[in-house]
Length: 86
Image (cartoon, rainbow, N blue to C red; front, side):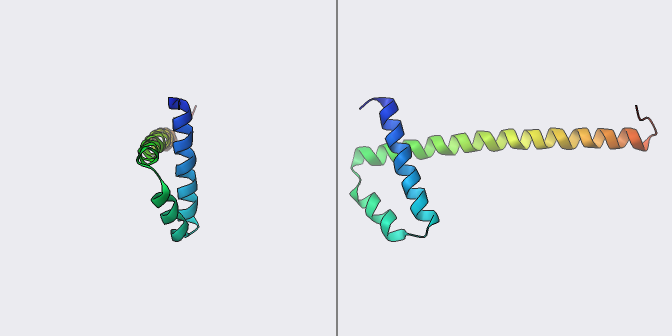
């Protein structure tokens, strides 16, 4: 199996498990995990780590954008408070 194919399978497994967790279907999640081979567990682990990294990066970008906007708003308010509108 190619790395790309393996990654796709890992992400598909991750999506199915997350779907089961979000649906409170603990029995289904447990049966999927119990049926997985060691290789599938490894793929799942790598997919979960990649997914976490992607979400962390997206959140960091969101936070950076939020902080930039709040700084700009503070600057505009400061300029307006000093009567220096342009």
